[in-house]
Image (spheres, rainbow, N blue to C red):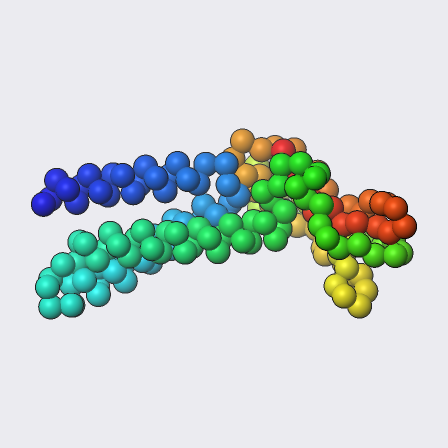
Length: 169
């Protein structure tokens, strides 16, 4: 039984690590964090279920937690535009009649870099139903194997303007 558990754990680790490669940073953090919390909760539930099966509960909890955490992290990556690999993928359905206003007159204050590899993402305008809202600049860690950031921007198409999310390549 112990050999089966070790094999199963090794397989899960391999799948989780392999599944995280190429995804954004929130996907990776979500999968790891969810897996750890799921293992703790599953182990406690399995141990207290009357069968004393904490190891099996921890494995099941880790798998479910990693999948749920990775899914939530992946959603955050897509909302922030960190997973788009091209302009066509980053193009949104947001179309407006008028272009956004120019950036604010006062330049953004670029605060201290959060990590040696972090990249400064300039602020940009988004459209929120009733008008434009400024998204301030921030430091962001590039996803694995990505270094070039294409900033979010508005592009004239036909009679309107389409919002293109920022993306890494």
